[in-house]
Length: 162
Image (cartoon, rainbow, N blue to C red; front, side, top):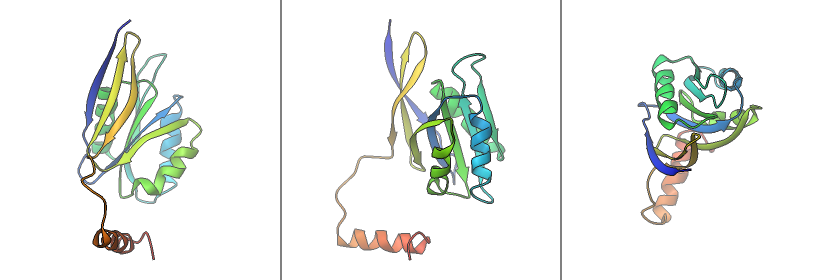
């Protein structure tokens, strides 16, 4: 048997966030679709799910053609079975993560971000697996008093704190 590691960059369409996770059943795309449209009015999204057995197709749904196409491309690039890629607009991951985690088929979430993402993939003779993700960049330091003030003001300005 052989094992190799690959770094797969994930393109994030402008103005969107990506959520990458693990799921376990063909019904994933329909159930995530329902969870999204009933969670945030006006959400735009594209979803792709890599089937791990049977026909082994990339199953997809969405209500935004650009995001759906990007999700399919990312899922194919990652190539790991039972992995899903979801792009969202007009919402933030914080708005949908609890609903996603409540979908019966969803096993785990690897990342939810608008930062640059790299997926670390292990490949064997059988297939591929997501080992982890690189989300954004390495920290440059520790926040100071002014940084804390800026953080607090930002959260209030965007409506997440009063």
